[in-house]
Length: 596
Image (cartoon, rainbow, N blue to C red; front, side, top):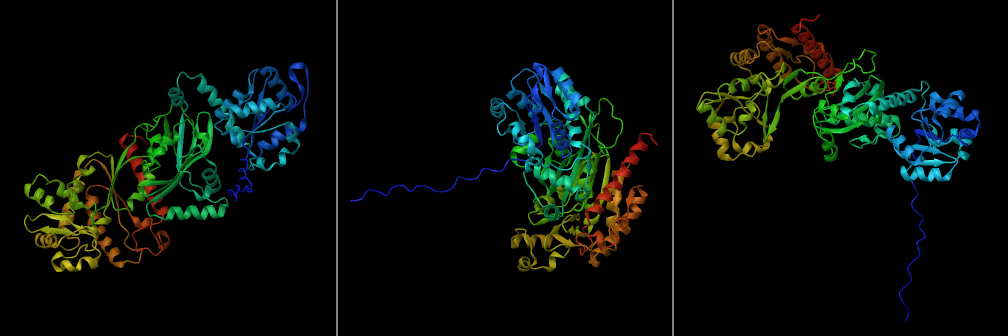
């Protein structure tokens, strides 16, 4: 009788190790590595090709440092004589163990060990360094003759040595930080300034590199294809997938120098698809500051908790361009921010993306409610004045689609410094008159819109796409209670406008006039023309600032997509609208402070 079969011997090859990462920093030993001989024993022989190699690497964006057991004064003198001292950053020269030297050096440079190569002639030093910096790449001097051709050290062209200079700036900051009594005081004295920019495609090579190379401060961990053309196509698709979407990049600078483009975000609806920052901006509070400024978009839980651990840092200022060589005082803070209330249709939300970076915002847009649509219309503001009326309160309580919270607005509280108003949603107001109380309320039921309830049998609702859960008895009650009103009854709308603008006397009020001519939906264009005709004279009487959309929307190319009926516009239009609003707000603020 045979026994159980013998276990089969696996002949499968072990899984291949991942390829080593590209090298961003080379750490050199000195004695018998960078030069021949031992400095402390009285004589060294420089090796010119090694000095040339450090300069070659610097021109590829790969920086070099030193870890050496030597007298720091004598070593610096020798390196200066060779002409290489100014090409080194964060040198560690001391009679001390190399493992902790290298661990601390990598941490101070805000790098990861796998992107660092340490070269030393002593195998014990190499093993010690890897113990303290797991993942560190190491090699002996035998690698040096072929180092320039090693695929890990291809780098990217950097003829201006920008990366080397940025690490020199970082070294200066590290010295100042170490000397400061506390970190917050150091940050306040650093004059940190940032700027937001939106010409992402013009700066795409840098943005592409950020998205695919950033790890430590990458809060979304999404990548693009390595091929730049494919990455660009994917990025544009990600932006256009949702209408309410927005992207931008962030430049960072402080009193020590400029760090260039350090961050990128792509926000879609209320969530961040990309949110990441270069290690150049680490420990400055930039990522927390930006996250708060762009409206705290949704992120994975761990990332959100990390960023939401406190208020936005108050030691960072927003400037037009962080790269500009403008004088910065010893201490610079964000200072008080004006508050802008934006009220209107969902397209105004895209404008808000650009304003939110500079101003605090109160955002009052349309939203769905159990199959009903809540539109921000002038009638809402008027109703809020009468909520104390018992009959009106009872009417609202028994009517679906009229949540009492919908009538709250910063227009009543005066909480904002500036009000930006769009009346595009008036064409969706669907006003109805209560037969029992006489009150006129906006009651937009999706699928029914502005139609007369009395003319629609309950059985027809399903075929009209109505999403609200309405019973036959409820529909009968709505038919009996509410009478139809025509679109935009002039006297009623004008009275509501007078009431609304009257509440904002003394405030800067900016009114966005509507698109009357560009688009394929003639019915909506004609209605917006009617809205404009009634809004314009009332806004003028109340001395509001008016922005004519016809200045910004001049042809199909300004629509998004190009065959849109005239409701949605390209992001360039929204960005220019935001810039005009910003100009008006800035001019008003200067006038209020009696500045030229």
